[in-house]
Length: 310
Length: 310
Image (cartoon, rainbow over all chains, first blue to last red; front, top):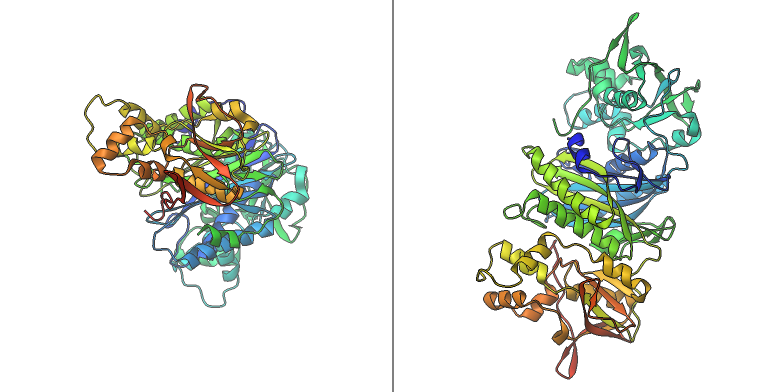
């Protein structure tokens, strides 16, 4: 689909970087721009989310793309389609959610457009500034692969909220998982602290496996993931036990954690600005995404998930 | 609705101009940004429009907001929601339409996002650069009010396409009207030619009356429209006769012409860069929107149309 679209598009020299990264970069070299559409029933579920939650979640996802370019979000514009019967208070709550995240990130809502539709659809466009953009294509052989936070935690939270699993009350991590689904605040503090020590950067939205593959393809390197190092929260392991899922496959394919997945030549500490950092693999010469299996290194098949194919 | 939203939004100094004009302006003073959402059945009708037409029409509307700020469109990003069964050729046609207008305007499609939904919804965000932005708030007493093209021509075209009227084959202007609905190319050449001779500028999207009222409110002036001067195309008059509509009311309330409505102190020629220019009124001290009725000047009640209220 993206290839078909790309063939219709012609460059006129206004962009430094077009389709293919988390956001595009304008000719000035530091303005980044990104757009995302979120629809009820596809990206969020009003049966267990408030309008405020929808606002925080969508704002986090949109601003995450700016952070994943090494940028600071500056403006968020909002294209809103709402059912005609929607209560004005609901719209206000939605905006409160958007505003809460913008405030946290130093960003500003610049207005937008609102139309009536049969269901809630939100398109958010974020503009940010990056002194030096961090791309998906910068990984070098010899780098290590790092991940912030936990893998699959947001999807764990979503399945709990959707009632797909019943964990004993008081199970540790339920709140954390739910929070990561409803309000996955981008890890801007880690991006800022590391800056150019990051060689390639992406946010995990399509699934860890799929996103790592993007880094390998765009950097033209081989990436090897060490499954023993993947940061799985105990609540995710409990959920996988109940649902009879393989935790490793779950962690590699679950989407929308909005964690930072990045490469760096450096040995990094396990905690940066209060955020957990885990070395989950390394970069080699070659191409493709691989995973350790005992002493072997085998190609990784998992592709993550695709909203269009779901 | 907009007032409710505005109350939720807080400034953080990233914008020079926020909600209220055709687009927002970033702190740098020349980056303009605007977003619009278009939905099947609300803004376009696939029963008589091809996907290519949808592309041209939506791109024209989006880029019009940049031109209406005195800006040159540089990048267009596309948030697309399409029904799952949509043919890939249809998406390609849609992009061809977008690309055709971008090419004409020197703009570039920077990619975007695509999701599955039960109907076609397009959110376009346009970024442009304006050396000196032209605002809605710059009209001065003593200025004249001008309009490019014809008033109500796009709506005439829409009603013809929708089969709401039967005009004799060969009626002059049918093609022109249909074209203005399907492909209302922004009048950038007029904006460029006039530049700072324009004191206040808006594009006519909500309806001439409503848009003129915006100029009067934001410029804190009284605007008087001379109904005898309104440029009505003969095809619009014929359509109004058949539909038993008052042509003046029609011209003042019909939306989405995407013509330039502007004020200028100067006496302008009737044609600029091959585009018809008509002086349709003037600006006085005071406030509100008025219309000449014989020797009198009376407040104008028509408000244009509102997609949410339709």
